[in-house]
Image (cartoon, rainbow, N blue to C red):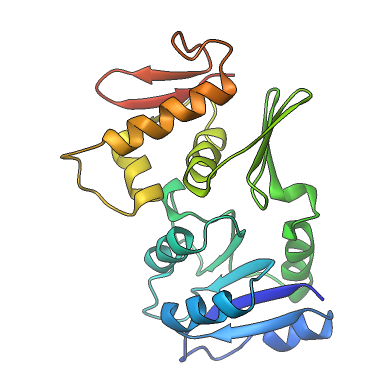
Length: 216
């Protein structure tokens, strides 16, 4: 039975747990990040649903925390109308109110690990977010959680320049830019995997003074 970790506010007027359970999902409910991490440790989820539709709930901040601790599991972020969410949130998909139960269930089904929506594809690159496996043609490589998260962000913004600050916030949950050697090392590791010649990158390029760009 697929397991869903549902994180929702204690003040939520409506829980989506009964809707999900009727579709035969096993639902674990948490109202804090501490509860969520404890549940995930004992019962690894197939999918995380973060319901931030309750008033005064900072869903983006919580989503970043969850992504940092539970990397490799897809996150469906539910938000209030007109809430703007950028790439640093760590969410794999954002569903804005209003939405029907049917739309929610359809999205959940597509985001389960076996679903195609759980794969990010750009050009000849294909990244399975669940198992952190990147494929280039017939070649496959296993990535570490941070490598996978970093590559996923770049693949979701092909041909766009992603700033170093954006990447540090999303992957390492920090805006401290005094030392970005960790980011540079992870970029080098990714180049060794996805570039024909890592010393002369053509796919994952540096935009001097700004950040990085995944060219397609």
